[in-house]
Amino acid sequence: MARKSKLVLVGAKKPQLQKAFDRSWTKAREREFLSVLAETCNVTRAAEEAGISLSHAYKRRKENAAFRAAWLEAISVAYQRLELVLLDRAFNGTEKVVKRRDGSEERMLEYSNQLGLTLLKMHRDTAIEAAPENEPENIDEIRGRLFDKLERLRTREEARGSKE
Image (cartoon, rainbow, N blue to C red; front, side, top):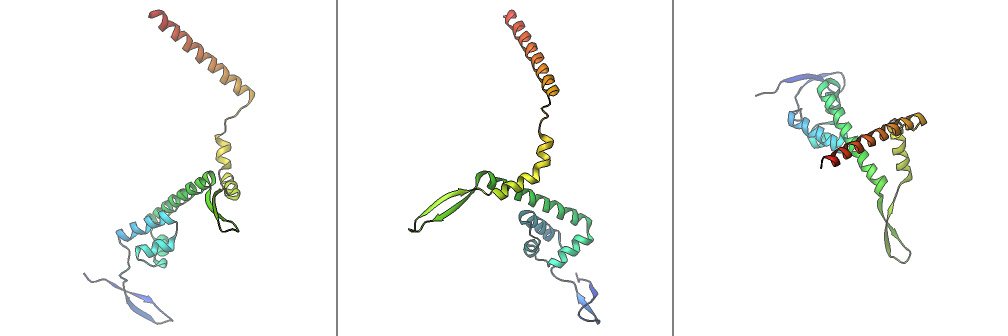
């Protein structure tokens, strides 16, 4: 099946007839692009892996709403993966090789304060929302419900003990 040619403005002001590229979008190329984008969060690398040009990727994102939504989803997945890696580094540290003057080496774990602080800033609002309110009246209410529940459990256990 012959591809349709389209008239595009190439170079200066002279319009020229240009054939469609072999590197046009296919479902397989789109899947590859989005997959690599979700893994790396790198548009240039995703375009290279899918075999399409960077400008075509951005043009497709601009013109195709479904592709644009899939692009945003892939970026979201990539950022979530990145955040998990950064959290792991903040909690578990990264291995660092320290070379001494005598030529020997020592391996140690290094913890980045800057990374930890950045992650804390990112999640401050979420952590504050999730924190329980420990207001005195709230504590008294919780204590009362706990005592009531313990009393019900004690009564239930006594009833079971008398049946046996």
